Image: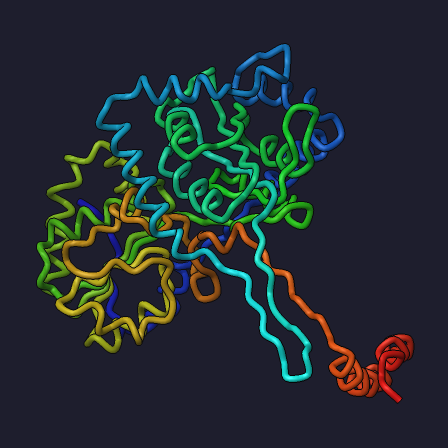
Length: 433
C-alpha cells in the first residue's frame, strides 16, 4: 500500500508541511562541486587528453584517438534506417509537430522612425552555435533531442553540436535517429561534466559553443552552473513534477496513471493531486494501489509518491487556484469541465494541460509545445524552452541631426548629475548652437 501524504488545506501547520514537501536543493553538495570543478578545469587546460581519460574512467570506453569520439552522419542515418518503422514515423511526426508549434515563436526585427528622423528598433539574430546534452546509455531520451534541437534550428542556429554518453559503448539508435531527423550538425560520444566543459571551452576536437542546453544528472547540472558566464545555459532543472487539479468527475484510473507518469522518472520526482472532493481522492488512492503493481517501474513510482507525493483536499475552486499558484508546478493538468475559464487566474505553471482527455505525457512527446520546463517553483519567473532561447536581440539607435541635438541636451544634464563629465561632453558635442 502506498503511503502518500494526504493533506487538507485548512489543517493546522499545512503551509509548513507543504513548504517542506516542495523544498528541493537543485544542485548538490561540496563533494560533487569539487569533482566537477576538477573535471571542468582539466578539460579546459588539457583538452582532448582529458576527454579520453574521463571517457575511459566514467564510461568504460577506451579510445586512442579523440576523433573516434565523433559519430559520423552516415551512422546517424544508418540508425534512422535501422529502427522499426513505427518508431521512425513517431519521431518524424513528433519533430513535425514540434517544428510547427515553434515556428510561431520566431521573433522578427523591428524599428520605427520618430518625427525628427531618429530611428529606434531591435534587431533579432540567432545564436551562432549551441551544444545539446542528451542522456545516453539505457536512460536514452530521443524526445530530448527533438525538444532541444528543433527550436534551435527554427531559430536559425548555424551549428548544433550534440553530446551523448555511450557507457560501455552502448549506443541508442532512437537517439541517433532523432539527431538525423533534426539535422544535428555533429554528434560526440561524451557525457558528464567533461562533455559540458568541452562544449563551453572547446578542445582540439570538440568546438566551443555559445550556449549549452539539455537535461542531465547532478554532475551535468553542476557543470552547467559552473560554466555559466563563459557560455549561456537553458536552466538548472530539478526533478520532474506534476500537479493535477480535478473536480472529482474524471475516471480515477486516468488520474492515478497521470500521477505515475511523472513519478516514474526518478525517486525524487513529485506528483500532487489537488481536489475539492475527499471521496474522489480516496478513489484515486485505491486506483493507484491497484494499478501500481502493473507498472514496470513500480519501485521508483512507489518511492517517489511516498517521499514527495501528496493529495491535497481544498474547500473550493478558489482555494485550488491559490494552491496552483503557490506550488507553481512544472506540469499542470486541469481535469475539469471548463479549464479555459480558469486560465485568467493561473499565473504560475510551466505547461498547462486542459481537459479530461489531455494527458501530460502527450506534451512530453508529440503535442507540439516544448517539454523542457521550469521546475522547483521557478515557473514563477521562468518559461518553457523555445525559439526565443536561441535568439538574441540588439538595440538599434540612429539619430538624425535634430534628434542628436535634442537628446544630447537631456543626456548632458543626466550625465552631469551622475558626475560622468566625459559622457556629458560626448552628448553635447552634437548639440546644435
